[in-house]
Length: 241
Image (cartoon, rainbow, N blue to C red):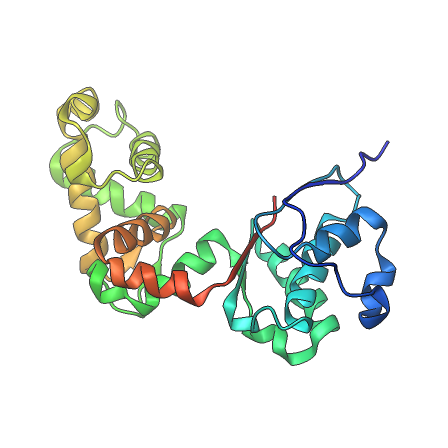
């Protein structure tokens, strides 16, 4: 059984315009239409599978544009897969036309890469940096382990890469990892390995998926003026799931 859709949001500041002004609203049920037309303050949509979450999100994007609440370039929409991002842009494009190309729509990592390429020098990179996949990461890490004499049978590269990725997910650059935490791994050389790994990435002008998020966090933390510029740019932030 499909779960009903519900919304958690403050009351609208003003009555919503009649649906007749926006034909696409007629395709929505009352709960969906309420979510689309609630444009003031935070909004949380709770719904089960098959209840039209993506329809609500894409129609809400179109409604923000049609009601002139924001230009497409002032809207950031985040989803979890590239396929979902493409579908989202196509659906919005069917409602607003070519303007949909100016929306910032993408996965967390794709949008992070877009921002990072604009400010790559501040992360020690060039704008045309390469993003390594897992195989490339493992190949690089194995080279560093061999150079440092770390036994890859006792400490497999995949295990140590997982440790490094978890540190990155926690926002920990090498200088923020405690020695107590690192001493238990790879004979106490895991932290030095992490540091060498990051240095090698910068040398070859590359980063991994964890870096995309980590560099953005460090960028916004260290450069308040850049953070403020994006806070002013985006008037609406929509996140799918």
